[in-house]
Length: 174
Image (cartoon, rainbow, N blue to C red; front, side, top):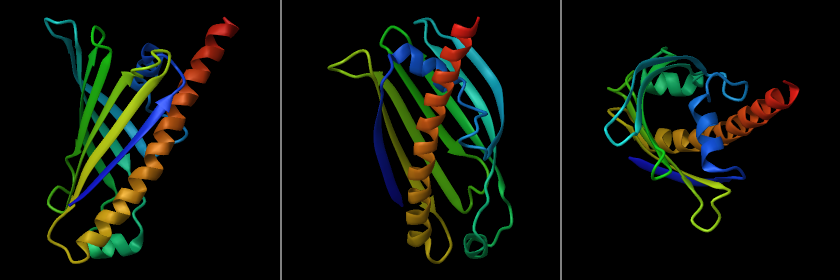
């Protein structure tokens, strides 16, 4: 098992970042996400928005990884549940893979909140637990996946920035 975590600060208010995060896919920074289906979306009694989505991804796994895992499958599915609490100004998103679970599990948690000292910026904390099961070199693969998660996190941050900037351009051109 490998635990990975990081933090990023967006130079935008929480509301702006959350709107972009909800529209994150598709985006040109992370073309591996090829589909997003909203399975359920509802408001609870406290006014929090709950969303359940299914993400379809296409990963170009290196040949060595496919050989170690004993699979040629590159299309995977991820279930995602998010809760947006506008009163508390918190968005929590949890995701886990539902494909290849006999070999790999990746449980990821993202939390978006206003910065405690500057509410005009937003702090994103990300953490993941990566577990490779039943194969040799599992520790090596877990480390490799953690490095890949770091690279993909940066792409995700860039995607949110891109969405915000494009949204602002759309508003000014109207």
